[in-house]
Length: 137
Image 1 (cartoon, rainbow, N blue to C red):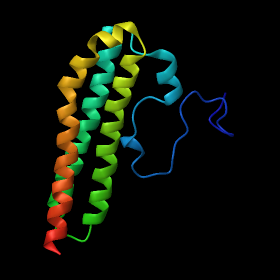
Image 2 (image 1 turned 180 degrees about the vertical axis):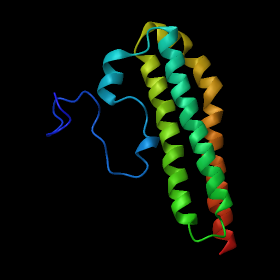
Image 3 (image 1 turned 90 degrees about the vertical axis):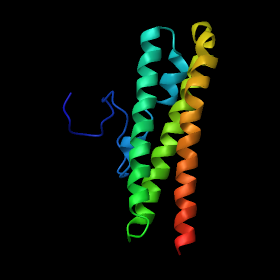
Image 4 (image 1 turned 45 degrees about the horizontal axis):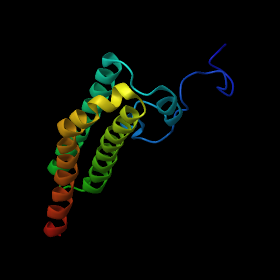
């Protein structure tokens, strides 16, 4: 098949024109529902994906904090919100996917204990920056 045409024969997900498409979780709903996490390798892959999104969110939050007194703050804030939401969604989907299999249920609480604070701290940092910007005005 060629790269021309409607893309119906492509196995990759449809691309969006959205600027922040890179912040989307790495796996689709249908894929998640049918697979579940059944091996330690799959678990590690999902955790690495979540950590990558969390790191990206942290970088976006840093950019946002640096832009508080600049004209591009609203754009940086939006970018950070999207990145934080993507990390939160990846975390939620990881937990949901673990719950789909017996193997996953065994490590679900361990994963939750290890990474819930990461998601919460990202949300809190973002909220603090938004609040401090409001106080600057």
